[in-house]
Length: 176
Image 1 (cartoon, rainbow, N blue to C red):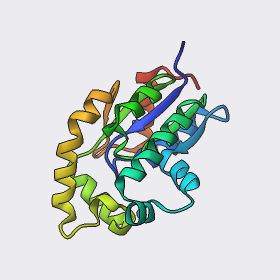
Image 2: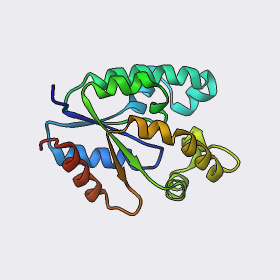
Image 3: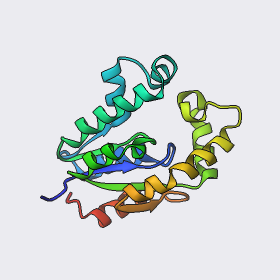
Image 4: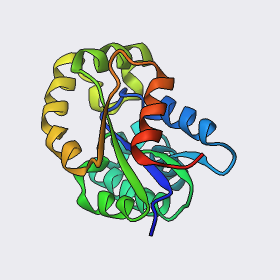
């Protein structure tokens, strides 16, 4: 079976949403962009920070498994996966059935700059006293999970969105 979808994995603020949207637009009307976080919000009926605050991380991860399973069943999609999706092998196994797994990488310093521009309260992982130290700590912990799951690794630090999209298309051989 030929894989016709792409799952973008990586830490928060590595560009999964903007790259995913641009990639789907570039590939044309046969492709659509989806986010596992959006599926979780729809399924839970509440925002992700509320899930973490009210139900805890374990419940969030259960929603995430269901979201990955749902997303993996679609054809011709570009999926922006939540940053922690790689922590559960079930998610990657589901996604690998129909998706090229592409890791978007960025330096801890770049992630910090991008995340702080977005606002840390929207990102439970770094809503901490020292967000920069937290980013480094979580990124160091997740790095082996990202690398083990990835079929393709693309560095995003200092690159234009269009160049990242071109690189993904050439490395996955997805047809436009």
